[in-house]
Image (cartoon, rainbow, N blue to C red; front, side, top):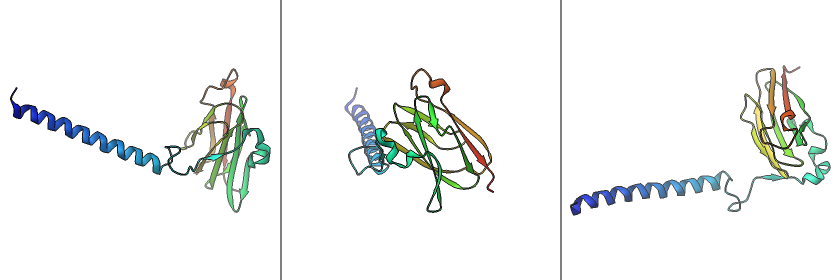
Length: 161
């Protein structure tokens, strides 16, 4: 091969490596901004002590109105969600708070962007507005033991009264 041909190949691969380095830098920067790179910036992750849920808002799981806003607290534990059925009004923004009390669980509410891996001690928080009345179901989507297949959660959206 001639020297000028090799130089073109080298320049091409150098360009590819520069693009990859830039993409890596942008990915790390995006992770820092979105708080998915733990320990680098102050975490927005919320923590609760699963051994002392009775001292938190999870002591009375369900739908609560706080300062004019609706908050739903749900605890996953030993093959059940508490509450297993939650009723909310249609067209109203609800902030969902999920946590696990014992082992790893998962929840994904159909028809929404709510999808959490529930790690004991961590709180999953997301807000959503369900405009269409109906029943939205979810099953635990992380294997949690022998009764995993029976672990279900139902969200009932009713017309506002």
